[in-house]
Amino acid sequence: MRTLSAAQADDVRQALRAAERRCSLRFALFLGSPVGGRRHFAERLHAALDEEADDAVVIMVDVRGRALEIVTGENARRRLSDASCRLTAMSMATAFSAGDLVGGLLYGIGALAEQAGARR
Image (cartoon, rainbow, N blue to C red; front, side, top):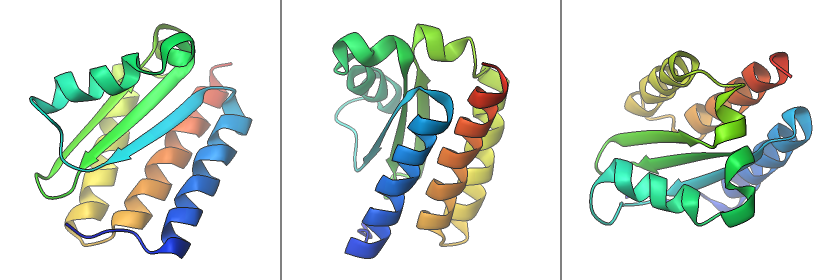
């Protein structure tokens, strides 16, 4: 699996922080292989955020397995519809399939924050 360079990881961390500032939701990203089913694993990651889970968005990307899951908490779901998450995931997957992992991540994080911010 391709890993992020230090500079790329920093860009992604900055995008996550900017997304949180923009819409006051908690954003978390997991890059790696899920243990068990990918949806169940993503939901477990989300649940592990404990008291932050209701206001959280978890993006789980399994590059090797070519899988992507977006999980939203109860409050976040009011601002991010399943349809908007699906469309964002499709755009991210398109970038990933073209070999642009970082671009897809940055686009997806920004798009989700923009959509959530618009529904405040």
